[in-house]
Image 1 (tube, rainbow, N blue to C red):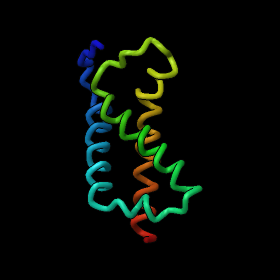
Image 2 (image 1 turned 180 degrees about the vertical axis):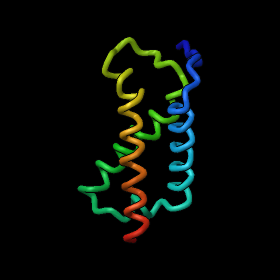
Image 3 (image 1 turned 60 degrees about the horizontal axis):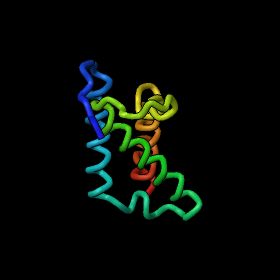
Image 4 (image 1 turned 90 degrees about the vertical axis):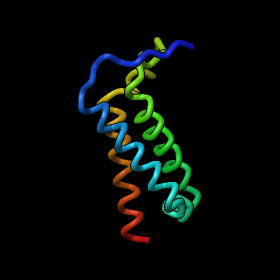
Length: 97
């Protein structure tokens, strides 16, 4: 598998990477934010988190896939929307828990 660093150094990519890293550390420090959810709500939250964090970390890399839907899923605006919704979910859970 060949992975190349994307030459475009825009602020969205760096912001998404930093937000994904902050959310990952937050979840390591407080895993109860997701564990405290009921099972029907926990599964979509875990899937959203996996997509958001994965897309945030792969953002600076050039997507190796030729599939259009996969390239779109890991590039802006979709990865930023996923990161924003996951951050909002964690913020709401931390305020209500």
